[in-house]
Image (tube, rainbow, N blue to C red; front, side, top):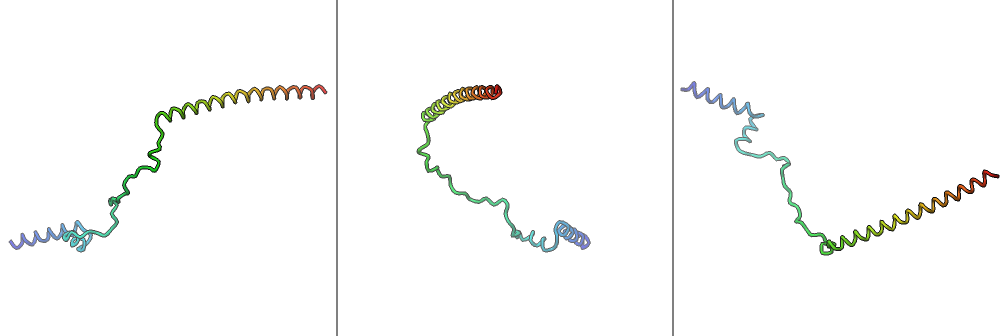
Length: 106
């Protein structure tokens, strides 16, 4: 009987020491003491959601359609101006051509 209790006691001591770094860690494990370290899973509280200051002044869908119409009218104006500029550049090139011809004739 004494031999069984000795073997049991040695087995328990062996398991306690084999699973830990030292007797100090065994003591911490048995008492439930926690390590003092940073907690990477700490959830910090955030400020509550707040409406933007100009929330009341958001455009309505009708205003969006009006804005799209204005953009298309501006695009049409720009495209007509680009054709006019192409005509001007073609007339300038013809002027340049005529000047070059006169220079070559002399």
